[in-house]
Image (tube, rainbow, N blue to C red):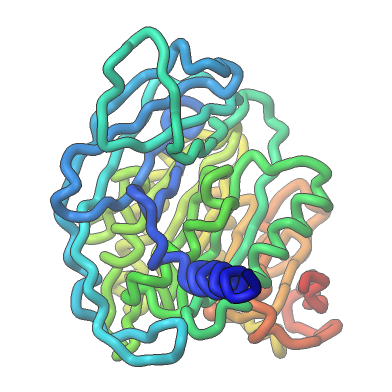
Amino acid sequence: MKRLTLLIVAITVLVWLNPASAQSYAYTVIANPGEDASTEIRLNWHTDTGSGDSYIIYTKKRDRHWRKAITIQANQALCTVFDSIYSKRPNGENFFEDARFIRNTVALQGLKAGTEYMYVLSSDRPSSTVSFAPGDSEIRFFRTAPESPEWAMGIISDIHVYAPLPDRQRAAMKMIQQLERQNRKPFDMMLNVGDIAAWGGSYSFWPTLYADSTFSRYVWAGVNGNHDNMTRQNAQSNGFFRNVNNNPLNGYDGETGVSYHFTYGNTLFVMLNNEAMRSEEGLAKAQNWTREVINNNPAEYIIVVSHYQWFMGGDGSSSQYSRWKELFDQYGVGLAISGNNHIYVRTNALYADRETDGTKGTVYIQAPSADNERGFSITTISSGIAGLKVTRPSGP
Ligand SMILES: [Fe+2]
């Protein structure tokens, strides 16, 4: 009896240490906002090759018996961008990832604003159109953007999910729970500011992270970080980020599904890939696209999200701030969010390099790292820029 108990414990521990090995039918499941997040939600999930067609069955959460459930067949494509990439297992062993799978995508349109939906993913089309029973299928949820101007998003950055160090993911998920407690209720949506994975090219890191319940409860919008863009051997590709999301396809040439924009209530979000902005030419391309997006999508507030820090948190010196401040001033960007530097930084509203009374200008925020490894303590720094304050992160 004792031996049996131990065996069960051992199996449980193995499965717990490596959730990817206990993969269910659909894995790496994520809901992303559509271009208009009040009426469109886009989903990505992966299934094994040879597992056939895949369907999403969804309805409003309050339709408890799934009486009005709608079934949509996913678009499918073979994804090989992660295949044979040099990686690490949870036990530290080196290996080449065997990662060829079917990427399923669906854009749900005509949704109702401010509404919570539930969905399941299935290899079968339900036989009855009158009622549907989810059976053993996992029920996941998403919420469309509300019509009201009040909403709350959780922000997390720099988790660097890495199989041999599962505490990173655990610390980040605990941080989200702490944010939820602060907010006193679930968020409307989650924002990820990049470096969610230590090596975006290591496929096994993604299903492990996305198996967390945070991913089956929220819509997520993220940006590509330098770590998401790389393999263990430092090969670069924005294809890793693209294929573990189903972002709106409104980005510019080469960045479709990676750089994108969406409207959330009264706010336009412009989501940028900093890996495509390293050169001056790349920056000009991104900025021309940003100007066009802002001109074509009038909104009360504009938020720009990009992974690389606006300021160096250690000494307050300018980083991406210098490259973007004029555009932000000119186009009325109210909030600029970044990460990467692993130090929490927040300014008051800045316009033309000066602090304003808040009626004009851009507030710059940098999220700290969330893995409980790379952050470090710092209190206040002096800066040449009025209004820049660097404070110690309060999270775990
Ligand atoms: Fe990072």
